[in-house]
Length: 451
Image (tube, rainbow, N blue to C red; front, top):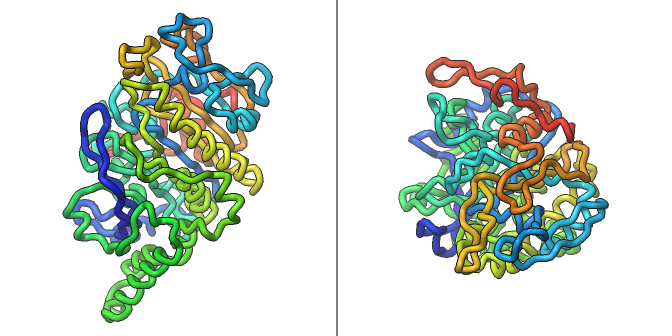
């Protein structure tokens, strides 16, 4: 496992500490190493057409009424500070902090009526479509785990299920998806990890590479070369089996290294995504706009599902100041990603979803913040060959609850699975108690508005 360490952070409203670092191949859990995972994956179904998903999680709970569902007719203690701006879709207005997204809304679907959030600070529903409890024996697989199991790898050097999510080792909000009852072989190949000291000692570390220096191509490649030299000079390559050699091949693959090396991109493309902030004041996840570009490059290299998280949106105080600071970064990176998918002819094959675990309270608290509000939240979809340029659902005048077309997390995942080419009812797997389980519950269908 290769690790790129970052800086120490503060936590969410739960006061959990954070420390981020990027690593490659962090899947050795419970004594099961990457080579064992590759053996298991070799039994999975072979690759089919290369459909893909980029899942952008906004940890902490972004404010739905300060993103894409402004409430201008509400009282000032609910309405807030922001003004709407027109988009290139007539009648579809969004918040003024998203001027770039306003120019590509014809390529997006705004869902203003996501319901069913459990209210916990975690990515579980955004990664699985399911609540944390109840769960079958072995737990629910992440969406990427289902895809890994059913469709396998496109490219042997690029695992099908990848995570760019910054992950803490404490608390559920660092959840970036695992294999559940499908097994650890289908958990994400983690490109960002936690702070557990034992796991650090077991890593093959990219010496001296921090998140701040990730874009230093020379240092990055030097570290990869060092690992190759150490493995070769040890003489161990001749004595290990094919799967272990494949594991080392992935860890030092030039294709994987190339995919995360954005210096290979046109400088104008890099500039469109913007410069992220790794040394931020508020915790959650790195504000790395570069990860949106890396996710696109990983998909082009062969990844089927790439998850990433961005910034922190748990603003019980100074919500408007924080949104003004961070939303422009999200605006820039998301817009660049959507534009790139169309420029590269990937808009029919690659789905993008941007969402968080819940919404925020309609009423602004005395600290100029908004608190947790699981009753309704919002999501943004793009690509996937969907019918875009539309809004699904609506909330009441105060943004308290859905009044039109409530949308469940599973419906969004059903849409994603459909975009990825999976048959919702033809797929059946068994949990650890031998009970049949499906991609989504019986009766759940893709969003009829977009398919």
